[in-house]
Each structure stands twice: as C-alpha cells, then as structure tokens.
Length: 269
Image (cartoon, rainbow, N blue to C red; front, side):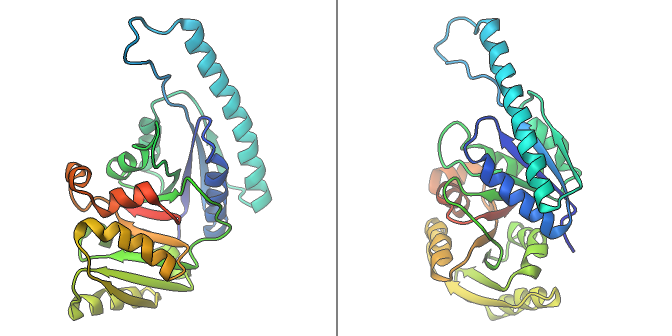
C-alpha cells in the first residue's frame, strides 16, 4: 500500500513553499508517486473600505507578477524532482480560486501537501481543505526545518470515524515507521485498545498505546506535549470530530494543532 499520486500546493509568495516542496518530493520519492505541483494564486485582496474597484493596471500587474513567480517556482520544482529521482511529475499554474484548484485535483489524488499558517491571510486554508476535499492532507508547519519525518509517529486516537479514517489514510506511512505511539484520549478501555492494536498489527504496524486523561479542550495540548515527550517527528490525527463552529467557540484538538503545529501532521476528516 502506498501513495501513487501526491499534489503539492504552493501559495504565491509563500515563504514556506521551499519546505512544502522538500516534503512533497521526499514523499513522492519514497512512495514512487506521481507528483503534481500546483501554483495557488489568491485573488487580489481589495480593502473592505475601498469605495471603487482597483484599477485594471494594478490587477494586471499582480497577475503578471504571479505568473512570473510561478514560472520560477516551476523551474525549482522540476530541478528538485530531478535531483530526487521523481521522474513522474507535472506542473499546473493559473490564477484561479485557491480551493477550486485543489478541488479539481481531489478526486484523483491520494495525498495533498500544504503549508500550515497559524495566523494571517491563509490561516483558513488547512481547515477548509480538510473539510472540503475528502483527501488526506500532509501539513508542513509554518516554522522549522524537517530533514526527516515519519520515523516516529504519534497517532492521536479515539474510537471515532475521523480517527479511523486518519489511520487508513496514513497506513502507508505507519507501515514504514520505526515506531508508532498511539495516544489514547479519555479513560482506558481494554477492548477498544486491543481492537486498534490488533488492527494495526494486521497491517504490520507495531504500536505502543499510551493513555492521557484530559478535558476535551486540552486534548490539543496533550497531543503537542506528547510529540515532545515521545520524540515524535510526525502526527496523524482525525480533523474536526465536532462541528467547525463548536471547535471555534469552545476549543478543540484540531484548532489547537492547526494553530500551534510543531511537527508535520497528516489530517483526515
């Protein structure tokens, strides 16, 4: 089992594009996957207080600059793929709505690679992509460098649909990991623990199950703390087990990890 088609999204002028490229190329090389690079050009923002539309020349210049940047990024993409031996690849550009571009790819892609933005103009992207695309997302934190990932994986587990989906979506990485730590939220249940442990074992994944008892609001902190405590270099978790509104109003693991991500994270909804 492996990923055969991976799509990496590069936001126009995003300083994290090199990190996204590095992660995507590593994944494509490791899994023998076809890699699609997509240049994502957000619409030119118009201030809400503006009384008139932006002049045509300003809009034209913005998209011309974006096209030029996309061409340079394509050259970098091709060079990185060639260096890593990723021969099956393609590049797509164009100034279209960011999510619409990703949606066009979602039906024929096994995994997306996108950058985390804890704040700013694009802090919505990972959350919306999780909810809309129906495809797992490998999120690259907005800070730090990650020469390797997936050697020691923290699997945030609860007996919920989105967690089970995350396990299946992450199976190619779980099978390759040297160590998998299952962080079990809530009180222990021997039958459920045996069940998830046996399921992973049948896929060739040997996992250590560890329990944490915390209030639901604090589970995000527990996940991030466990990454440090267990020396993990990657997280696998289900996203938005509760409604987006409830997460925003009362807190939740997805929201906390999306804001304070400290390791590359595979998210599934």
